[in-house]
Amino acid sequence: MRKVEVCLSPELIHLYDPEEKIVVVVDIFRATSTMIAALANGVTAITPVMDLETCKAYKDKGYIIAGERDGKRANGFEMGNSPVAFFEGNFQGKKLAMTTTNGTVAIEKTKSTAHAVLIGAFVNLSATVSFIQNQEKDVLILCAGWKGKFNLEDSLYAGALVSKLHPHFGTDCDSAIAMKSLYESNAHRQQLFLGQASHAKRLQNSGIEKDIDFCLEVDKYDFIAILQGNEISILK
Amino acid sequence: MRKVEVCLSPELIHLYDPEEKIVVVVDIFRATSTMIAALANGVTAITPVMDLETCKAYKDKGYIIAGERDGKRANGFEMGNSPVAFFEGNFQGKKLAMTTTNGTVAIEKTKSTAHAVLIGAFVNLSATVSFIQNQEKDVLILCAGWKGKFNLEDSLYAGALVSKLHPHFGTDCDSAIAMKSLYESNAHRQQLFLGQASHAKRLQNSGIEKDIDFCLEVDKYDFIAILQGNEISILK
Image (cartoon, rainbow over the protein chains, first blue to last red):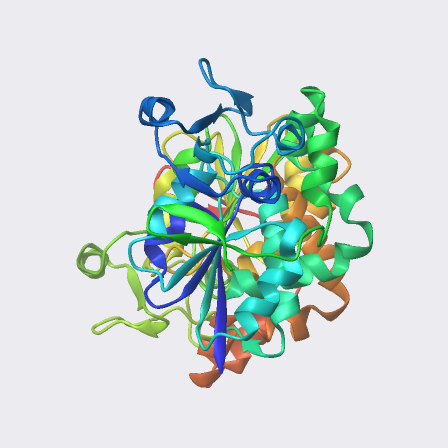
């Protein structure tokens, strides 16, 4: 039987073996939600970049550049890490280079050995589930967390994915069992439960409730986003 | 308001600051449960030791030596990591040196800076809660995990402790919020839920169901165990 595992923080990724697995990287608030929003609004490809300076250099190559650190748009960047910002303006046919506090690091840590790297978000949850169901591969869900720590929103997404893959995928991974239970007992009050999350509070203080609402919307889109080479795009 | 945090693995401890906090180290299956069993059955002091060779050397100093690796008694040791073994034989007034796969590492990682290090187990949960309630200190619960990974039983204990400290202790730690919820939604079926845990399965295969039953018994004892210097003993 195919297996699913959950890695709760990029700091623990050395304990897992991504080789030949489908890795789903998730950073709900907000990197991976923003990537899906960008692709849904015309961006054709996203290059995840580890550091701010390298990311800035993409501007001269005609890319839109998005940079976030500690939840805020970094100096000298056109875009930060806000998904709703991609609903304003014209992004048709544009390429995006993006660096974020947690999300891009998580992608970097698995991309060399994984069978495939998918971008996980609530906004395209069911599409991701359907795609995985049709592959004969084990799955590793990698939560981006917050500066290395466990966070509630990424873990809850992991639990949702494990729950929806059950019973076609089994698990002997304790974090998968725990997050599945956490999701199933809180799904009926997800907004309320996630309202307690440290990062949701951080974002509420920044006055970006619209971003939070977007990131928690389930199945707004029916495409999946996949890393191919160094670019994330919609799988046709 | 006093705060409680949960660190889900010793591999994440560098992200937390144990300074001036009460650290509760927990390794339900079985190091910390075994320590409580040993103290309840006459052992006066336990010295946690990082490696097998150093631990063995304590034999010449008149200590009983307990050594476990990968869930099994290590070669050349009188005791392994079985709590029920301390119910057989006479341990009155004896000192114990002990090294285990996960538990002793967790103790080592916090003991230098913490205000106090307590040994957490279900068998003395309420005693630990009462002690903490009477201190004016923040709390950090450190789960020993399994070889660096999250595990279900330590995390569920952490959730139980957070739940019982609420509302006297607040938290802005996402792992504390998540484990509290996990505990509260599974407390009524704790044995069943933990039966899924990878380590419970590992132990069941070793035929030590009595150890599992002991480790999950709640409030069998009403003393707390505390590290003072390099020795763990009952707080008088």
